[in-house]
Length: 85
Image (tube, rainbow, N blue to C red; front, side, top):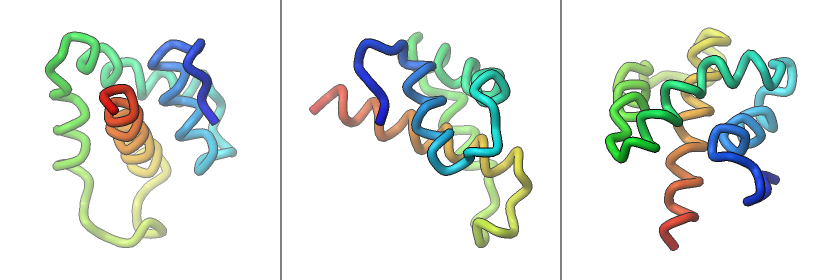
């Protein structure tokens, strides 16, 4: 579970790492950084682009990178929703 004392980027990585335990936090952070910066600027463009660009298919059909990006995008939406509640 992500702690609120963590940065938004760290929370995204922690959430995604639960479903992608083979990925290192550093590797996930590389993919998460553009999304977190986009959200920090209040635009969220990277998250929207990631969600639209990911094929609507079975999880197993996605590449490892697509899984990571999708997991991070979902984590960012969930975290933003929780912050605004």
